[in-house]
Structures are given as C-alpha cells and as structure tokens.
Image 1 (cartoon, rainbow, N blue to C red):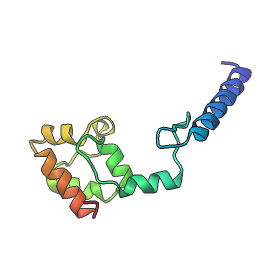
Image 2: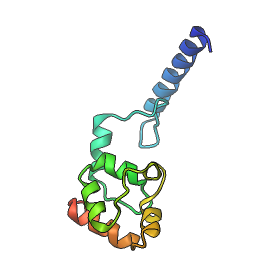
Image 3: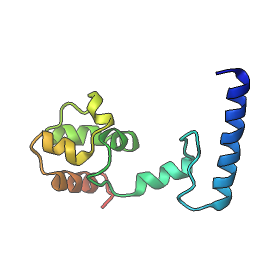
Image 4: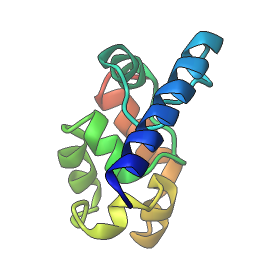
Length: 111
C-alpha cells in the first residue's frame, strides 16, 4: 500500500466518521474502533451480561479478574479470554454462567 493509499483511506475513514457522527445515536461507529471517554464510562456503568467477552469485562472492570479467579477461573489471562464469552468460559469451568454474572454485577455494584 502506498502513502497515497494510506492517506486516501484515512480521508475516507474521516468522512465516514463525520457522516456517522452527524447521524448521531448509539449506532454511530468510528472506523478506527476508538471510543470517547464518555462512551467508556457509560459502558462501565452497564451491568455485565453472560454474552460479554471475558477480556472486555476485565478491560472495563479490572477488579473482575480477582472475582473471576475466586469463582474458579484461574486462566483469565489466557488467549481464549479475548474471544470467549463469559457464558462459554463458565461452561468450560463447569460453572453456572448466570450465577457468575449475578455475582460479578453484585460485587461490582452494577446490579
């Protein structure tokens, strides 16, 4: 890819971002995948669900790592945590996904 291609792609991304921002709403997605601090703060206030990716949960709530280890998930830093939902991780560890989800939400004051 040439410098021109990178610049042109960047300009197209900026135009798409501007169009998405003009539309507003939660469906506006920036092409670079970044989020504003306000968007991250809003996510941190939402309850955890069993379909969330374990790595995302830990990124939003670092203290969840200790809570998950207390539940019996000692391998939360394994590569699977970047792709595996909380429900799937619970299944692999013979845990009830809904109980773990409820425990996390109560412990993190998200319930």
